Image 1 (tube, protein in one colour):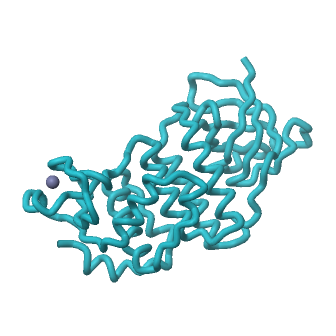
Image 2 (cartoon, rainbow, N blue to C red):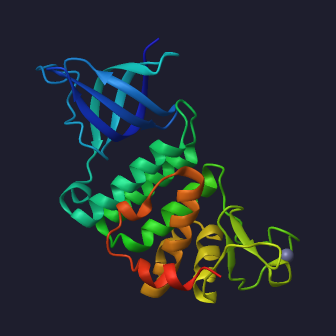
Image 3 (cartoon, rainbow, N blue to C red):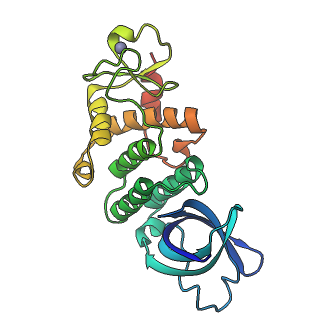
Length: 253
Ligand SMILES: [Zn+2]
């Protein structure tokens, strides 16, 4: 039966002469792959230009197979800065690709949909750097891979400015338990405070957070290592300007 839903275009490529294959993140259906047959013919059902990252309303036929037939699309919202500004385009590309990598097909998650929408809105008009960390920490939490910033992974004690992060186990270890774990990353109290603040604070309050460049380097390094270990996804290939030499030599203990 035909269905209708809002969705973001995560990826798209041309297929044969006139068709397009896309990866979409839909509000009610989650991630799907769709084919728009005859997109490059003058069909009135395809009124959107199908720009990557844009929000559209799709008409489609849900199926059990991997690629769904999309028979109509209307543009709802474009994010021009996400395509014209290179730094913003990289961050938006990172969001789209990590959602594609981590989320399973046809596994709806309305928190993830709302997060994509909120963060695309924000980076379209604001500086993208703090939004990057907010997106990543909240995305990991909403998608079921929440790193533990608040309690010790070993003894469950409430942490206060703890600084030793276990990449493999995905969280912080308190001082008295730290002897058991090798290969921990050390971060500053300020960076730890920013991580917990982002995880515990909702929009719109969280988006007012300012993070110093040094803390951004530390947070980036922790997230980069965690995401590479658990998802084989390389954040550094999207974000070129982070000072990775600082953290690479300093934080491993
Ligand atoms: Zn402990």
